[in-house]
Image (cartoon, rainbow, N blue to C red; front, side, top):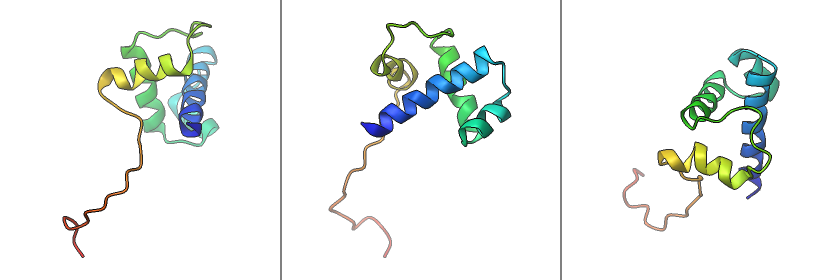
Length: 90
């Protein structure tokens, strides 16, 4: 849950810096300490979802995640313990 909130805060900040401040992908990436490619991917997803900036005040994190990730077949990453390790090389 905490990771989801962090990712949505970062997503909102990426969109703000890119659209409101007009920063380049490189500058947004440097400001948020993430890769340029990650910034590009988030912006591309926002464009595909036809999101505008500022985001609607009524849009919560769950709705934002739905539009950007689940809509395109991505799910939240969940660590799953695997009991059967036989398929992995020793």
